[in-house]
Each structure stands twice: as C-alpha cells, then as structure tokens.
Image 1 (spheres, rainbow, N blue to C red):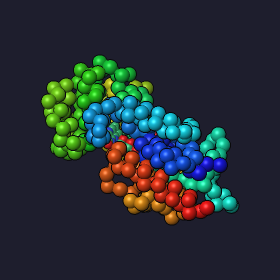
Image 2 (image 1 turned 180 degrees about the vertical axis):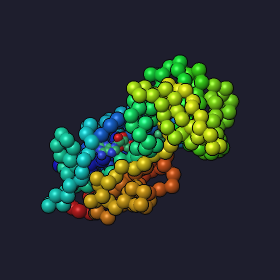
Image 3 (image 1 turned 90 degrees about the vertical axis):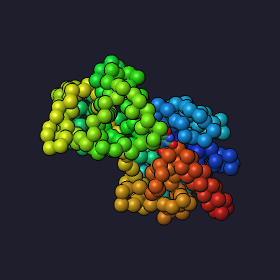
Image 4 (image 1 turned 45 degrees about the vertical axis):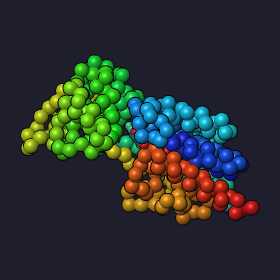
Length: 302
Ligand SMILES: Cc1cc2nc3c(=O)[nH]c(=O)nc-3n(C[C@H](O)[C@H](O)[C@H](O)COP(=O)(O)OP(=O)(O)OC[C@H]3O[C@@H](n4cnc5c(N)ncnc54)[C@H](O)[C@@H]3O)c2cc1C
C-alpha cells in the first residue's frame, strides 16, 4: 500500500514524487512511455532557472536520479484506469497489475497533435515523425521539413539543420509564434528555408514519404522531402480518468492552481490540467502543489 501513486514520470510527476518523498510519504511512480516525459526528447533547454543550458535528456535524467535517490518506486506501466476501492483507496491499473495507494496524482502531460489526414497515418515512422531528437538522425544528409510555427517547431528546425543540407520550415501564416531568440537563430541560419502561408494538404509516397503537397495562394505545390517533422501543438489524453477528475471542453483536467479534483485524494499536475502556460517551470510548480495537497490530505485522514 502506497501513500501516493503518481501517474506519469514527466517533470510534474517526478517533482510531485520528490516533494511527497521528502515529506515522508511512500510513493510509487508509473510511467507508460519514457521516463522524463516530453522534455526528454527536446534538444536544448535554456529557460529553467539556475541552468544556463542543458539537453532535455540530461534534464530528465537528473530529475529521475534525484527522485530515485529519495526512494521512489518507479516502474514502467501505462495506467489504463484509476479504480476506486470500497475502502476508499485507489487502484492504478496497468496491464501488469494494480498499484494500490491512498491518494493519486495524475501528471499525464500531453501528446503530439496529429494532422489527421490519411497519408499521415500511412507514412508514420516512414518519413513522418513527431520528434526531431528521436528520429532526426535516421534522415541524416537528406531533405527534411518541419511543420509548425511554435517553439517546438523552431527548435526542431534548428536541431535538424545540423543534420540536413536543407530544412524546410512550413507555416500556415507569415508569422512565427516561437520565442524571439529562437526566431533570430532561424533567420540567421541559411540552411533553413521558410515557406510562409502554406497549408499541408497531402503527402506522397506509398512505403516511404517522398513529398508533401502544399496549398499556397490558391495553387498546389509539391515539395520533395524524405522526412517531415510535425510540431503543430499538443493534446491531452485524459478520458480514461474522467471517472475521478472532471475534464474541460478540450479534454484537460479541469483544475485550478490548487491542483485538486472533484475526487478527494486525487490531484492533477502539469500540462495535463487547464492552464495558460505549459512549461517545465509550471509543471514543476504544479508537482510541488499537488504533492503538498496530497500530503496534507493524507495527514487529515489519520
Ligand atoms: C520539443 C519540446 C521542447 C520543449 N522545450 C521546452 C523548453 O525549452 N522549456 C520549457 O520550459 N518547456 C519546454 N517544453 C514543454 C515541457 O516539456 C512541458 O511543459 C513539460 O514537459 C510538461 O511536463 P509534464 O510532466 O506535465 O508532462 P510530460 O512531460 O508530458 O510528462 C507526462 C508523462 O506522463 C506519461 N503518461 C501519460 N499518460 C500515462 C498513463 N496513462 N500511464 C502512465 N504514464 C502516462 C507520459 O508518457 C509522460 O512521460 C518543450 C516541449 C517539447 C515537446
């Protein structure tokens, strides 16, 4: 029996575990995909206080190491549901079994948004990718494109420009939405070719991506590329937990800054909840708030 089971080992979940462990609680962390969460796949972090520059994977490794040092039981396993048990404890159910705890912190983050066109599904992993750090090296010296205008897209384009002779940055409008310092690096990089006001409507290639089809000012253009990195935002994936935490219209956990939910003993933290800024600092902040909320709640049950 754990005091707290944390679902998701991203920045929010691991920070929650750190705070709960340091408050003397017994904590299990379950991770369905990759320890460290989204940031583990980011090439560079420059905006976390006290760290001038660090790779996303090093950031995640340090945090995981810190949490393991404090004595967390960290395990792989995608949580399929949270079941409420008659004795008011909770079971986090994975395909491998159940982890029973007195309280729960859901820190499930977000997933990559898809374009949802048939060619995207057909060519996923065959040239269509969502993570530059994970898959960029497979396309070294080949022609690459990045779809998107935000921080992730700009970071991907910069990262891939170290691997490819040319990187085509495709944006729906004539504006980049990412941080100014990233924009400046994009403009200074002559390997990055910016295609403004383009709508990616289709992809060509049967077993491998060969080209993307773009609509531009009413005309259709075909741009030959070997790899397309899609970075058009993220979406939550929380429906399976709606029995314990209400979702907002977009599918995020409807919770305020106190990270509480409609179910006493269940807390939410990080990118998975309703909020305006989804960043490492806010995920870490939520982790601390949710953990202390859970700790106080547990202490009141005695
Ligand atoms: C390419 C990229 C670059 C970024 N760069 C920066 C940056 O420079 N600075 C910055 O501040 N922010 C950056 N961000 C944003 C930052 O990564 C996120 O805000 C932060 O990681 C959110 O942490 P989280 O713990 O809430 O969610 P996540 O990191 O998404 O972690 C959630 C974890 O929960 C797991 N999970 C989900 N569902 C389940 C389940 N059912 N069972 C078990 N596990 C589950 C997931 O696999 C994941 O590991 C970047 C994001 C990306 C994608």
